[in-house]
Length: 109
Image (cartoon, rainbow, N blue to C red; front, side, top):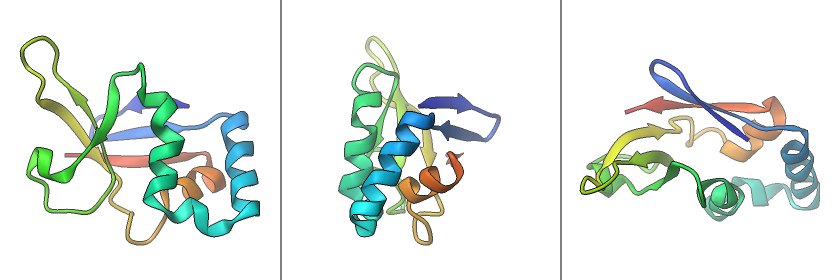
């Protein structure tokens, strides 16, 4: 998985191994890709030692239920300094879109 910062968005791409995994999960149970838990579980290994993490909307005073990925400051500033929301959340699943297209885009907030 690769996280690519663009001017006003974050592009997330997956490789063939991740795409195969998502396809297998989808074939086993299509609805599993549409759950918040599946999204959290899928991204967890990539967030463990990286700079990105899940952000709760209330942490940044956002009025949305969109999945949000962010970056915290370092040292004494542990506030969220970057936030990206998957604003298509009401229509599409992040994981289904990754499986189908190999990439998703999150809007910078």
